Image (cartoon, rainbow, N blue to C red; front, side, top):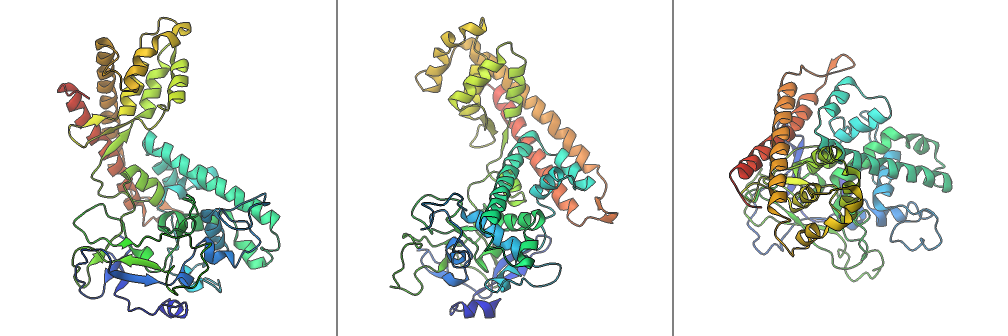
Length: 461
């Protein structure tokens, strides 16, 4: 790949390289001691624009396909965003088995990308929907907590929507798909692989001035080997911000103006030390369903929307309350947090429980008793009433007990599971994936116990 990068314009000395991490895939490591860069202006690595895989560099390969943010969208009936375009291109140029990618444009880079995503939970749920999932994949899906499964289903919906759009693109742009070999590669398996490459490895890259989160991104050789960390003590590189719209700016005022630049960590780095990226402020649940791993998250949380819905189903006017929660924006993302201390329910969860515990004499009188709750939601009052607040705390107590109990049950069940098999052979990734699921359950139980202590300790929220 280094030869290919040099042909694309790489002329800087490389001071980092990918290496295998013990038990954790590959990472990005320094090849020599690096001084601290307190001003965060010292480039650690510069990858030429021509080597980046994004909407702009692929536009020349697919000029007839209308792209989000592009010039040819005014009369287009079907427009692809960057995620869809990159996933499609990767699918059609996926390297098979131990062979190299045959893509004449980005083949050497594509050949360095991960070949398999069997341990990613999106693979399990997609295979289940296709009715080809292995028993251990079904077992792991069945072992997910309600909030993790719910968020994974949202990711799966995004995937299937993108696949549907790419299939429509194939039908309306048949001249693009005239190569039999590439056309054969555009199937669900390869598209899932390409989609996961994009979802787990793309970096923010401002191609358009407009806010196009699914198109202002790029795949970047070498840089995408860097792993995520939430730790402030580990060396972490930061991508340099591009302030201009690189799609429309064609002026060649600087040959390197649109290169991808990774800035050096603020602290000194030893020879052979790993250098990280920060993917953003994500909770472990999101890291798991989006990226396929669980990290050392310092902000532990649990979403209990399912249990609030269960409470509503026990009430005579539960359907009406659900409608109001939805209209007011409090029907999901109802969470509890371990920090900052004391451990506490989110404002959204408190609002939902306060509404749930309003005294509704009959369904026809719902609107007339909403005002005290609306005053609290708007910050005009602290509580609905003492009785309402007492009922909310009882519900929190019950919710915490349920989460604690089911967490303990699921952790014990997963600990007792035997080695996973696929087609009769031992599955190499099963124990790692099972460990991720266990850690998610343990986190939920830990948060619930801490919030329960806060509730019973009389903490005011």
